[in-house]
Amino acid sequence: MLGKEIGGYLTKLEIENYESLKSIINRDYETFSGLMLERHFRRVLIERQSYTRIGGWWDRKGGNEIDIVAENELAGEATFFEVKRKSGNIDMKLLEQKAATFLHATGAFKGYNISYKRLSMNDL
Image (tube, rainbow, N blue to C red; front, side):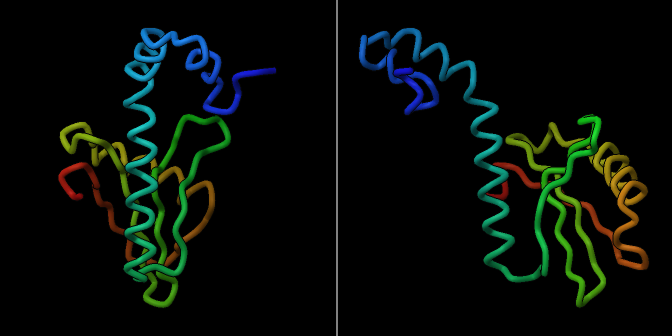
């Protein structure tokens, strides 16, 4: 099928349906930019080399998602990060609740020093 090369929208480019593309970009921009912001901060954390493992976490039901979980097993530390475009949209209590669910579900980080951090466009 034609049109899957650019997120399924190549056909719209070929037929010059720019208004539809503009609507789709406007509709999906926040989701896309949020994912790119998470990816950026993961790269920054990797480059700092302060952690021995970095990833994200979702529970099996999909109700709890933690953007970034970073572990330094040598120091016995773990940090849970919430990433949002606007720092005012970050609920630290909710992050702590999600982290508690993670810790209970995985049994990870026993005896570790646990911290919670927010990352947003302000941290670029």
